[in-house]
Image (tube, rainbow, N blue to C red; front, top):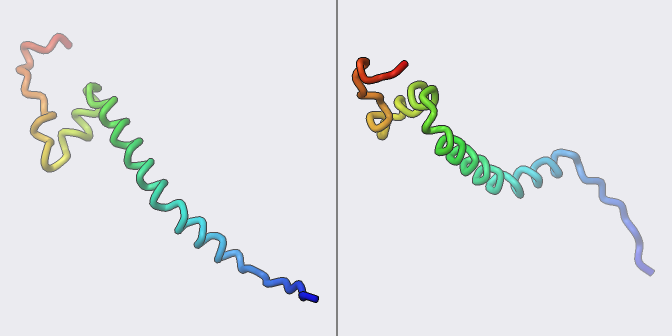
Length: 73
């Protein structure tokens, strides 16, 4: 007859297993959500001025070069 033996699992093992299993997926989904949010909000002047114009490589694309006389507000 077989014996049933209880092997206790420390709680740290479950946390490590959860982190190892879901870290890649959560990283990819979070990056995708951040890029989508920036894409959707890129037409907003606040996002252009405060965030996108300060990105090193593509920041010059988002700087506002319109003269002050041509701006309605």
